[in-house]
Image 1 (cartoon, rainbow, N blue to C red):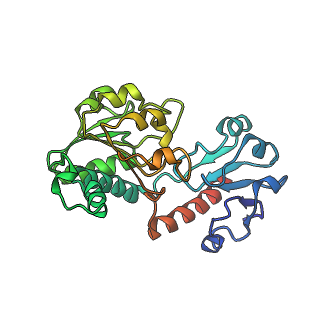
Image 2: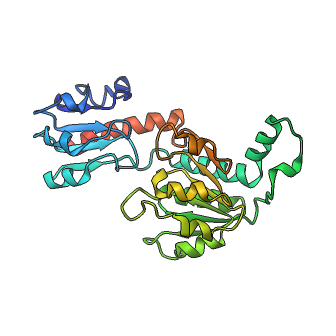
Length: 283
């Protein structure tokens, strides 16, 4: 492997992939120039059009993530630069996390915990909780993670339907929102999906319904969610990190700090898969 691979994510564990990329370097993309054929990035280390412009020999950008919205895709496309992601490293983890959020809200774990910590011991504080079996679950986006969640929910005897315009048997999104006890979002962030869950669509959801988002926060309209107090929401990734006070103070929103993807196994798989993708692309 030639010394033309730059890893611009300072958190990337170079020692883990030394056997795959023995001559790779870690450093800021802003200080790079000619000679870099492959760039490894992540959502924490985005790649702009200006970054691409200063790398005349760049042939491939590999991101250690599923999403690619942190990369200037149009600029890469104009130069014929391949953009490669790692689409399957955390399927089990994210689908597990989404299911855990659904179960926690469906059975009142979050409300119950808050009540006890406030000094109360009243079972009625958890509100209208429901039986897991028979829960009507709508999965929006039936890719790898959405399918994994659907399979797990089916094993718990939930009633599962999906919305995905690229998959046969898809239910219209408005119909799914009005029907479901719980909705789980598993779409990439694109111009088509940005803000697709807006005020009108949130209003379609029944009182007490659950909205889980383990993908990009921006698929949901921030202001609309803030005002949708009839919905129980759980997000793993919001609009900014850390979230602003107006989100932290919402009783109807439960948040985790972008951890759905994580396990020691998925972390190892992510970095090794990204390194192997560099080798394959340059070959």
